[in-house]
Length: 452
Image (cartoon, rainbow, N blue to C red):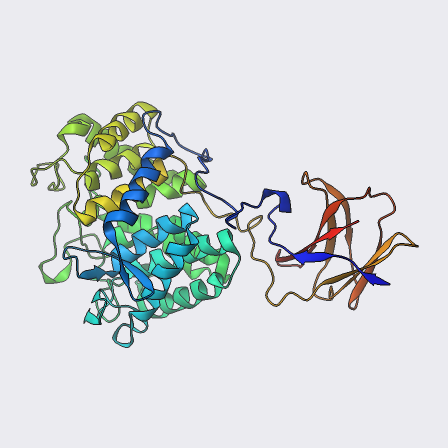
């Protein structure tokens, strides 16, 4: 028996789909979400141009790593890390993503139970406390990174998700809520802009922990308790009961709450959640009554303006929220977002996310088809040319084995119950390259390319 020429390979459906740079979903994907509307007034070039600007103007080196600048160029905050890591993963930019990830890891704080310190610089930590949404975004970016590059990113994601569960999820009379950071906040002080229920549903699948599903569902209880009945506007901070948060926190729709529409909208765009659709429809109907060019950067919950500027942070979030409402409103707010070009880091990082969501480049991870490959692959393929057979070793962990052609068609599939090897007849296969995929009960797989 002679060994086939073979190579380990990442596969989603077939090896022919791999991009030369290694990512499984290279930018732009321009997907059509299962629900909602995409604007006709902007394209993926807006997202790409904004990402190019990020790399040339907002990312700076720190040794072998990179970090995003914040209000002061020498500083970085953890929320900016989360936003930028999300976009780098969706861009499939492994070189930048890995340098961001290494910087994140270097700034995790024991004072924050190993979450990232909120404010840092290249040399050290300036504020060792944590901000919950930052690590949520980083954890989710790691899931996207794992789908893109099939390395050990999922283990890092699970570690952070576990820390978050043990550090910031709390129970408030049967309602799951998020603390603002490690060691502070909770039932009397939570921030609805830290909640991304679509992310939480993915966390539940990755960890097989329904705590995250409960948190996703309870997000809408918190949202409804604090939202104005007419405008839909929600406060920067609130208690779980829906009233004012402790400590004199803002009870207005300002630079925290402005982010809520994009975070809630994902749960409709990806999952069809009707509660997300209803709230986004109410708030974007109100915003549309003002007009995209007239939106101010701050409101009392009754709709009275408190701000004076028309900014990307507010306009773009309404554009994403309008994707749950109607195409004309989505087009209107997306057009205005495309006209705005503020240089302040906060607006830029949010504009990056908004453009990716609006253009179909913030896709939902599919944990059924985009499942992780198994760790420590051990499969080997040997051929017996005389008998037109291949012997596949190292299959004890698997329950199904398939042979795929270069067009992705499954040419052979069978359930297996082997101690360590299986023999397949390949007499019907023409000479050429094929993919062998073995799948376990959890849906994880290992793939080898082989030549017939």
